[in-house]
Length: 170
Image (cartoon, rainbow, N blue to C red; front, side):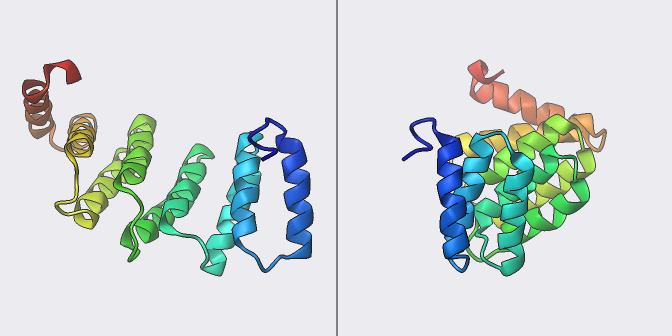
């Protein structure tokens, strides 16, 4: 409640106290990480999420959040295994969360990682894309193909097809 009332520092103090009294309740660490992110303390949130990952208590969606935090901190080496584990898990994260990570990697212009994530997404979500997420995945894949120089002709054709399907998506 305090966090929603823009009193995040107080909320963090309370959650710290609750964690000290019940450190076995790992869901409290997720709450703490959320508060830390709202206070613009991504390193602290990253540490909490990584702690939960090492305990095997981090779900796939929060693994993608951890991967995103690693990306933002420039830790590409730590990002790859976390994304791979998240997308390989039995209970997959929402496709949109995976596409958000791919979108961020594309903006970073790390084409090798973007290609790797794109392929992993395609294999992890066969036939499960809605029209909007399918368009986003196709657009990102096309941009990666063009910018990485791996297959610019195919990427250009995909972008042309997307514009033909929806001219306002140009």
